[in-house]
Image (tube, rainbow, N blue to C red; front, side, top):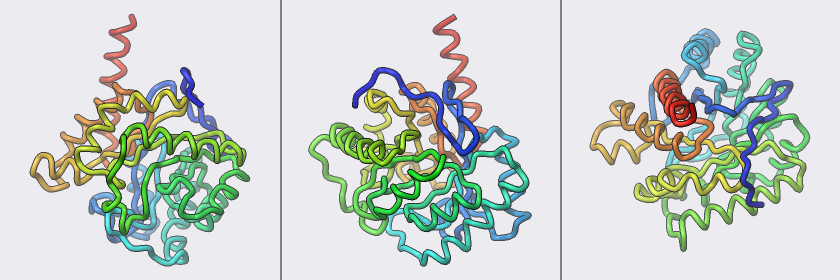
Length: 286
């Protein structure tokens, strides 16, 4: 299972996503309660299109649509409500930006199925298929990529499940086991997300960023989602609205340690970080 070379392309519907250089995934939350208010978008098509258009203009390659908050302590909503929120957003973006890769942030198979039918070509599952066993069947039957995240429990109790024998070792073991399940089901286009802020303490989040390069041995592209999370707010003693600079600092460390996708609220700043990172890489290998 441990490999030297990391997969550099992902199948996303009829497209191949090139990850030879890092890319930005922009967050669009069609929810009223996501932890960062500026990422929330109303249900009006014009609002969704304006929000998406700005992110695309600033350099987003993927747009991640979420219809249910998974912040610590969040409660589940009805599947019908999640569908009511995400499907119009996916359909609108697909219509107005037909070449855009659309990711759907859900851990529920029915939502994933209908989202794929509406135009999503990536499923971003915080539970790695654990919270809904039918997810593997849905993803295996579609030409989509799958983001495999690490989390314990569910959003309502995950922050009570932060004790590990060996944080990085335990996550590697989890990923090895879940990758085996996925590939056995026929799912091969897999992105790994260590799940910053999900069943992790502040100290553990920083340890994962520092040792992110260990996960490159799994041979799958790495996604990092640290944008404006409470770890940063608590670290610098400022509100979430004032954590962009700290977010960018962590993004640069993540890039230098092997991240290929940055899942962010602020596309322009993340894109700038990638540009500077690429210049550093070019200077190192003239």
